[in-house]
Length: 139
Image 1 (cartoon, one colour):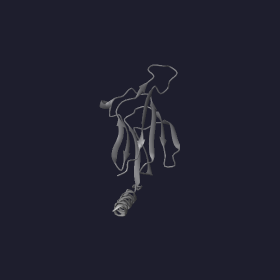
Image 2: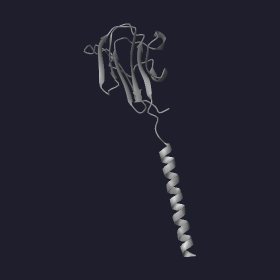
Image 3: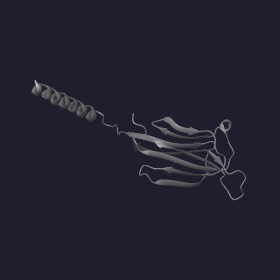
Image 4: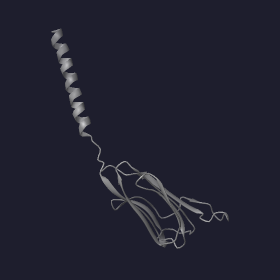
């Protein structure tokens, strides 16, 4: 009787261990490529922008002078993204101002207003700042 109980315990433990291995093996993460696009639009005057590129390095662009700026790269699920923007114009949503990170055409981080203002400090050429960051999701 004791031998039978012990064998049942071993069998139950072995069964749960094998089931756990099958469940763990089936939980493989999706590492497909995703199109990441940084977008800045609606600014009248020049701005500075820094973004994290496909290598994980910061690409910095100074005195960008355009109404629509984009930067696109291919990244994998779990890769970080980051955009840092400094600009002059005190603009809000009605002006058509928009800063966003799109992944596969869908906005995952965006804003229509600044995160921080240094006000009228004469030493600050670009008194307004926006930072958006995150991780490419697993789909």
